[in-house]
Length: 163
Length: 178
Image (cartoon, rainbow over all chains, first blue to last red; front, side, top):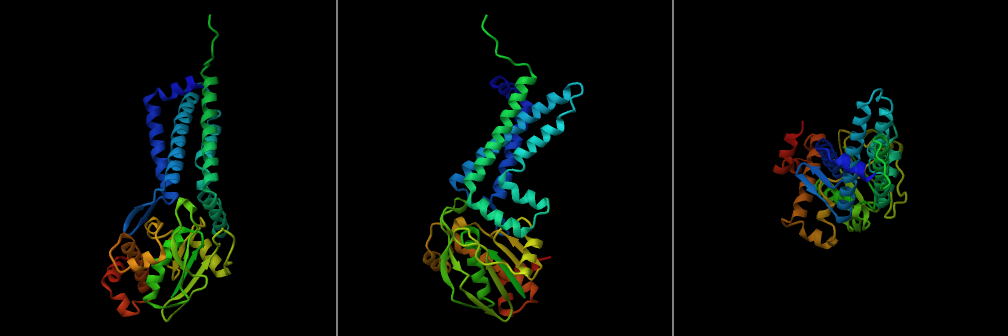
């Protein structure tokens, strides 16, 4: 798995994709988490240490996951008949990154859940921020590790016995 | 002119917005039983934000029909149930259930506070109240948000009362509304 990790991050293109993913995720978390409040008087920043650390870790995991999954996706597409399973990869990534607990209200709203129902959910998410952030981090970590594991198997990287 | 405000007692962003609402609505009417309160410390990683208690306050005005609802108490338990018309407002204008929610005359809405509660966190109620006459960052933010609310009310209410709506800061914001 470590060899697969080196393989992924050894590519400049993958590093750029991961970096862009990190920046976009950090911006998204800062806005949806109300760390940056935009008003007519301009932006005001509220960066408490625990939220700053949580959002940075989560954005870092999103960047890592994006890098690994995009690499896996490219490998898959390069193979004959590789389009099979691409949808599953995409859904797995979206499930782990885009629909994290922090973004549940937005996602559920899109699915048609009413504002009054989400009001209660929002209250719970705010009160249980540490738990929600932990769940999101575990989901992202799980997705990244699963991607690495798939890459290890797909690339035929095997630990060989010393001769 | 109806003005609906949805918040919760634990919420620091709601606490920040109440300062501006008290300031703005004080220009259009009279507050009674307005007592200090505070948001719950640690929510959203923010220290307790001193604010006003709207649950026991009353407001009378010839211009603004103000309705405030606190959906949850300081522990997050349900507090004031929403009436059917209020539920419609939330479902229509606040589809993600965010608080605080402000709806001015069914025409203007705002979700979240107009400025950061970080400007008030860690200070005492008396300290913030005493500083409103000065030029601190918190005082400027509160007054600016109050000017924005006043401008929206003035715009919706046809510029009444004139002494409030003719204030330069309010008039400038009204002119920017399209």
